[in-house]
Length: 213
Image (cartoon, rainbow, N blue to C red):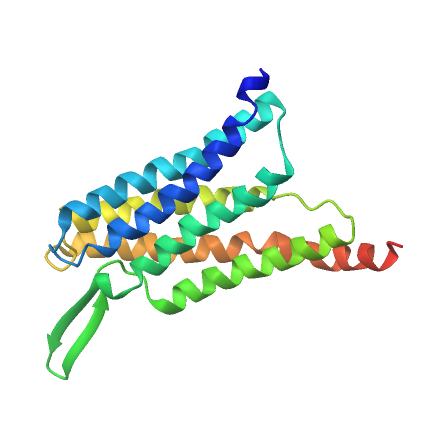
């Protein structure tokens, strides 16, 4: 069993490496069809990387090899992959220029506006800040079920959006554009909602922090 104890941490590091590879691959794509093969490479990398998030946690709990390294690097690699993917989807690679009567209108093939990414970044910074205060005071502050549900939804919604962009360009099919919009707006809503339990726990946490010598 001792020979297996490093596998969860290796999977975590592999997720970080695949996240970087994902960024490289998606940077070689330009909507609608420039470097389309690279978009599929990026989709594959994202799916495999997201799968390791479940696998490394499962193995760490099964083999009882939860480590300080894993506690730090696992959420870091998660955020690197998810938030990095959201930034890419809200970037110029997915910009769609459209001409309307009033002039040139810029929209996003990914259905993701920059402000939506800011909201999701804000949630992560908020939760990370709360966790930092708790742990600095010696208080237990594990991940809540809403955070796990958020990660799962993001890990499913992001590749679905990329697949839809690849096989059914939203500029040509209204149902595809609507599906992408619904997925991205729901992702923002779920992400914001997942921060509410942490917000609700904040008063109690601050009270415990004051009473801790």
